[in-house]
Amino acid sequence: MEPIGFDLDVAENGHEALRLIQKNTYDLVLSDVIMPFMSGYELVEAVRADPKIAMTPIFAISASLMQVSAMEKKRMRQFDNFIAKPVNAKELFDAIRIPLHIDWLYSNSEPIRQVRSIGDEATSNGADSDRYSDPTQKLQQDLLILARLGDVKALLEQLPKLNDLNTIAAKKVKAYLKNYKMEQVITELESSLEKNPRA
Image (tube, rainbow, N blue to C red; front, side, top):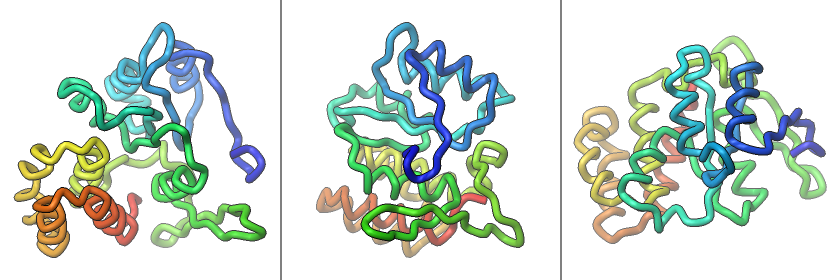
């Protein structure tokens, strides 16, 4: 990420990561799930419990999202998104586009970031804004997390709420879930978020 212009801080463990988040303002945090001294679960829980930093977007990095326990799935919902190991650059760039309010322009296969205009102002600081500025976006983001976890039961339980806010998206998601087409569910929810990015 450094070659395309991002400023990065690297923490050696969960405790150091929490200290850095408390000290600085970050547009996005990428956290491994398994870390020494403090796990990714404990880190995100500590961040969400602190009003001063609770809105910091945090993505989990994990190699086995589909094999996690029910308790781990519940804890993982506090993350904003998931990146699977081994990390694929294109998937990473696609995932960070919405929370960072940027669009990609590609030149010689290298992405070039461009700040997206939100309303009448341009912003690249997601940490200073509400993670969920709209109830539809919040629900869609929650559903996206469940879809990435493969939690079909929880998705079905949440569908009535989505239907109240977005009937078309709810019908598409329900149809995909009937055939366990999780990739299509994820694509539909990502598309909905893209049309209504977080402000």
